[in-house]
Image 1 (cartoon, rainbow, N blue to C red):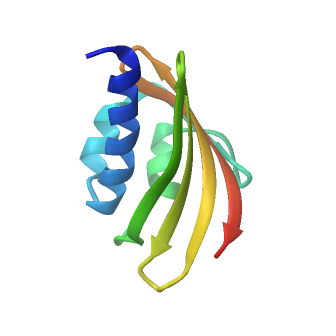
Image 2 (cartoon, rainbow, N blue to C red):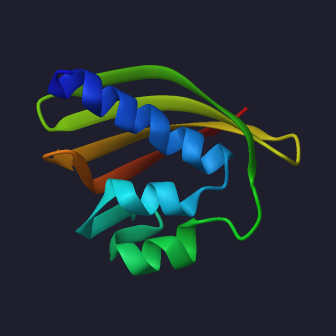
Length: 113
């Protein structure tokens, strides 16, 4: 399997793990020096990411990947997330890889739908 296909599957598996409430799967996809950034978070480490960003209870009803592109070590994803409370929103994310693991994620918040 080529790197692009492997990285596409890793990205899809990442969002599927959120839906399945599988923190263990996400943990295995990240490098030890993983960082996460968003308008609310500035390069937080993986421990803080799991404390701050991983829902205590399942949060999403569904996540629809609308766009996914891979260019070298970067993946760009636009998705629509449906929350269990009935709300939904769109975001874009830039994921950077080191070999077969995700080393960083930068989230760009979109709009509520």
